[in-house]
Image (cartoon, rainbow, N blue to C red; front, side, top):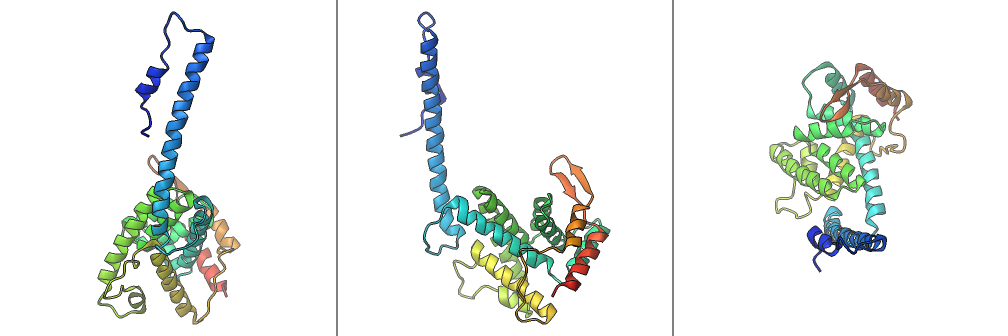
Length: 274
């Protein structure tokens, strides 16, 4: 059944001028309210149907017992975003990137990515702006962060958009590193025969986390290097994030700016981490 149009609803609600009274008005209001509620309900059912079609793809297409969309998937996205952000800021060059961002008017994609992850982990506004900047400059990891952020919020259309962007950027990155022999390209290079799941969100997230974790282990000479994602920021670093100055933008709102203090605190926390 096709939802009725507004004109049809108004036609049914029409009351003759010479016969209407309070009871007729109440009845007319009830008919309109019922019609509007019916239209919204059918729209909600269509949205739920679309969400269920997207859901298997967002979960890498693997069969599993269906879970409530508003609980399991959103919570998993939040955990993944926190874990991914924690791995990003543990890079050995993270403090240098933040110092570069504080010093220069030229913003590098890696600097914007690390800064956005710091803001997210400190529950400070502005992470979305810097992730978008980094993704726009070619970072597939930033696009994955945006995918997870929107998925956590239940914004499935935006999540699907950034999943597509992450896949496109990952293809470009693999193309540029296909002739390299370093360990990152070997881990991230797609199989020669191709794989339908290679560029799905779950696969890209798992691969990105594995690459970042391997880099941390290589820098610290520790094979098993567990990360404390429950408390990823030391107190001095969290305080430094909250102290950041901001600037207002008509389109993007309040945007925090990196500082040399933040870079110093990030370096101190990295040096004191086990």
